[in-house]
Amino acid sequence: GLPSRVRIHEVGPRDGLQNEKSVVPVEVKAEFIHRLVEAGLDTVEATSFVHPKWVPQLADAEELYGGLADLPASAGVRLPVLVPNERGLERALALGAREIAVFGSATESFARANLNRTVDEALEMFAPVVARASESGARVRGYLSMCFGDPWEGPVPAGQVVDVCRRLLDLGCDELSLGDTIGVATAGQVEELLTALNAAGVPDEVLAVHFHDTYGQALANTLTALRHGVTTVDASAGGLGGCPYARSATGNLATEDLVWMLRGLGVETGVDLDRLVATSTWMADRLGRPSPSRTVRALSPT
Ligand code: HMG
Ligand code: MG
Image (cartoon, rainbow, N blue to C red; front, side, top):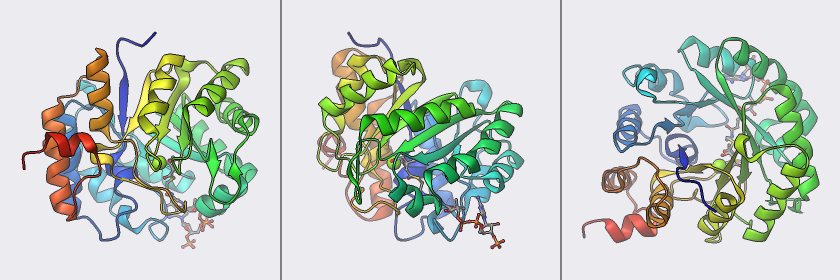
């Protein structure tokens, strides 16, 4: 069966823009986020409080996040931010963040490339972050990258992923997002990993899926996860995205492609597709290239 409603975790302003070569003005990012919320996306990952040398595009995190105070949590708007360490958490909490995400790796190669740490060291770095965030009442998402394949290590065994998932939950994460960072997964692998996670005591309710569309498999993988019982899906407006520290990572699953499929299946998302397409078309103009989303192209006026 399928869920009657899917929660979309919009990552465009963060995963979508973090890899963008030319720096997008902070006003454009703020307008992008406002437009996404107006299109009905209630969870919009806004930015990352990481080292600005590592992700120069998001060096304006303070200015951007500080300017989003008019988007009310009381109206159910959630604006999570990425936080790698205690320094990042302090920066986020100082601006009133109510939801943060740490981001671990299932593989050693990517932990080194993305966090300058081993897998164990990264989890040690996250432990006080998750504890302090939880104490302050903030919700904590734990991302796990390279859940299916890694550009340096090849296919990633499900057991290795399950182990790091368990450890992230033991730290106190409220939700786990399973990342196919380089978009190599196919549907059978998705089914296999979710089944292995359930067998290890990780229920679908705490899981989200995060697919990149490198090989055009993101929608098929998402549908597989939904049929399995997952109800939270990460997506990026217009299919923007990629990770600067993962070779061959291209755009995320486009939110429009996801909404088109779910609408056809009669699954609620709360998203106004026309407004979303207009937003991605507007953003594509700002970035100077067309959206890679097939749905955006099909629904855009020519
Ligand atoms: P490091 O160089 O090991 O840092 O980087 P450090 O702990 O040794 O500190 C060095 C300096 O950085 C110090 O300053 C710190 O204060 C400063 P100094 O004393 O030398 O002047 N520093 C900071 N400054 C501001 N904010 C901070 C911060 N932390 C330290 N938070 C670190 C370690 C984790 C900081 C670095 O590797 C980093 O920032 N990495 C982030 C990489 C990133 O953002 N990647 C993209 C997101 S992950 C992704 O896209 C995957 C995902 O989409 C899911 C999927 O698709 O798989 C989530
Ligand atoms: Mg990603």
